[in-house]
Image 1 (cartoon, rainbow, N blue to C red):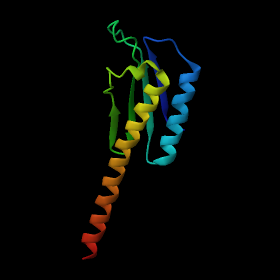
Image 2 (cartoon, one colour):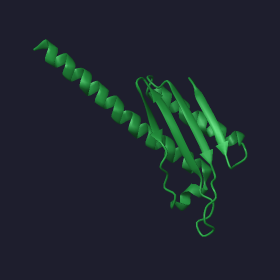
Image 3 (cartoon, rainbow, N blue to C red):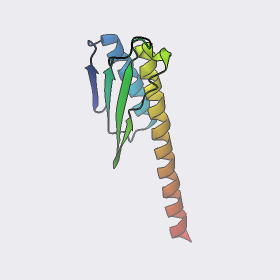
Image 4 (cartoon, rainbow, N blue to C red):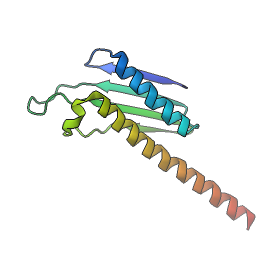
Length: 118
């Protein structure tokens, strides 16, 4: 796995969560080989007591020429009390964004190829 950084904030380190992140990162980089690195930050910020403790996972996915940032979380999603689900949701969103960028690059390359052939 190329360039994976994992940080924990306001929560103690968890080997199980780290392993879950590593598995998701490996799957993402296997799907998109142009990924140059991934930075994951797992946090359990202070929340209002009526919402419970909700996990916040932010990701930065490095691509040639740009970085995809997944920072906005569904703070009102009670399912994010489960750290594993919060990690999975963040990586799912990252995969969708990277796929959009990947498809735009392929489309742009096709158009450039077609216009030069005309």
